[in-house]
Image (cartoon, rainbow, N blue to C red; front, side):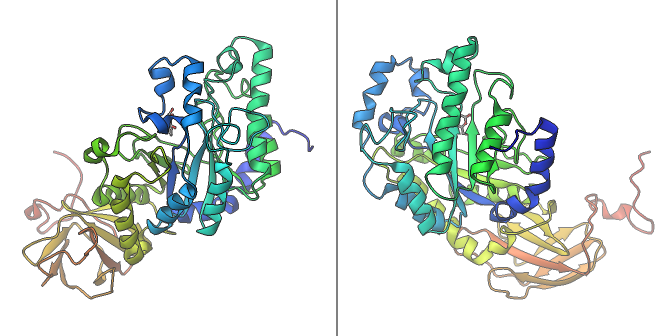
Length: 431
Ligand code: GLC
């Protein structure tokens, strides 16, 4: 066992290897989160065990009813691939403490109960089959373990509990080949990284998997931030995780959840935001009790995948952050001297303008097939002309216009009141 580094030494090491370790993830942009476990059986939110004050023995009974159909993880992975997602993260063990693999550390698992199968193994195989990056979600909080709560107030409990967490993740990172992401969640009840022995544990995990990416949820900053249920850019690497319906990560009745769920357009709006902000989107599905993909997620995800087949250039591998305002119904993202206009509402008039542009536009075209678009540029105004009457994108009616400028373009937002520009330079000074 190599020597344990101090926090500054460790942070220096992780920072110095980050560009190389994260290159694939930064290009990937879009991943699938899967929340699947005992809570999926009853379908009342993944926190049902505490929200409904279940006695442990009663909750445990669900384990015998947990019986995912063979091949379920393959369905998730097939859909992720179709949706244009590049990696997955599965809840190997959520807060209710039930492990989805053949754990020696935690006998409360899917090989001893319910399906008597190693679901993590099936998931890993499926990710590999479809060429997807493999992430393991691992809850730090555990409502089933006797030390789960006591750990915060009793030294011996704490030692046992952090060893337990380490032991679980050691199994996961030892027995399944190369793993890409360790996705911790809810580091409660200890309040510091010292309380979790996080510095030591994470170093040991990285020894097992040298290219591993670790998120920020065990009270160390680690490789990336994890805004939850909102897409807010951070100044570091970040990944927004989103439920599919704003209600629950775990399965809830599909028929009732459908009206709350995201459609292809809302997912593309999310992707636009993450690309503009230089982050990733980890979009969740909560599979049904038998492990099937919830029906309301299928069409939107498949449609987004078809859209990405034609327009993926604006998502994968984009290196520039920044959103450009094109007009009220078209949002832009940058890539060098190119701006991509994500058009949400296609003009029915055959023309549309983009105001405020100060750089010479060389070409305008439709991204999906390169069809040139006629334009004129006068003053700060770019006017696209003779546009088709209907949105050219046939998947989600979100058409992308590619604008190639002479150099990285600049724009002044205040191009309204054009008369104020007449004969003088624009000034931001107020009178
Ligand atoms: C939360 C919840 C949890 C969910 C997670 C996903 O912190 O506790 O149920 O798994 O977010 O990010």
